[in-house]
Image 1 (cartoon, rainbow, N blue to C red):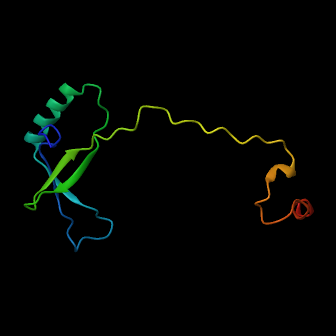
Image 2: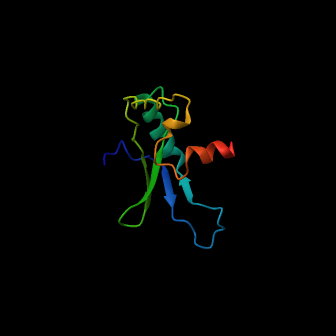
Image 3: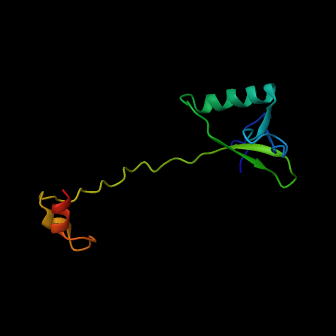
Length: 107
């Protein structure tokens, strides 16, 4: 992990076990450190609208935050072609648990 991945001035803390259920975590910002980090980040990423991050605990037990750099694949997913439909009940196949006659009776 490089220093560029760590979010300076953001310090997550473990959740207090006595906290109410709706409290999912805690954290602190060192304003001076975070301001410096954010200014540098925006210089490198001038069009950034969002910063996703993961809150982690080091082996020494200290909280830290890192940028989540995951991005979806830029390739468009292949579109599945819709099944050809003739409009008739006979095209439904043999894998249905009832007969076409039973379906027509219900409808």
